[in-house]
Length: 323
Image (cartoon, rainbow, N blue to C red; front, side, top):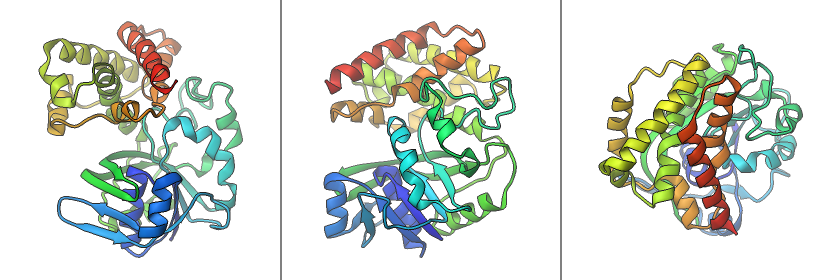
């Protein structure tokens, strides 16, 4: 397969490295010092059991890479709108596009089947340009369950997980999804195919909805947030509001809040990605992770007062950090 990783940061770099190791023809699109290091010294992937350096085809542009079989978008949610129109040189009639991203995706209501079927998600696509301007028939849904970090330019530390949940937006089990999953499994990754990809989106989102903004506002690591009774209570409230909204859209979570918190304890003293971005002066994924849940609640008349407040605070925190 010809595979392009658009956004070869922590997740994209890890994914692309594993695919390249397995013999797939992989190109990486990156920028800045990370790109320069990949070009000069290769892409280095560190994990508990190994450290490998791969010579990779890395570029700052999709131009010249040619049509691909699969394009993974591993960008922050706020960067996708600008990138979608620029993907054209990578696409032919059969190219599959897989957004490996956090939060509610812009394509959420594409073939969703509910009362909002076909509508844009206003929080991240306010004028509907993303939904109108990109053929969502190309999209294969993906939920990333991997922990990794770019620890220095050209060097990615993989700290946990290797699971990329895949699913068609319409709930079908397609031949293209099976081909992609097989390639990923061959690369040593886990790529389960599910019929209800939005349930996987929400299962991850409920944790991010609470921990990302709360830890970012308090500068707490995961264990500190879980061991503080006040932040733990706040976390429970935000999770409960998010689950209530998800259930209104037909989502079955399958785990209780207590069980979800027990799962979170496995992250130990990890620092959430939103806090890492704030500390580095980068924009944060406020709207895709928090704002979209508030929007979804308003759509169906479900109040989310605590999450609304958290959204207001974390948006201002992001604005203050970046400017």
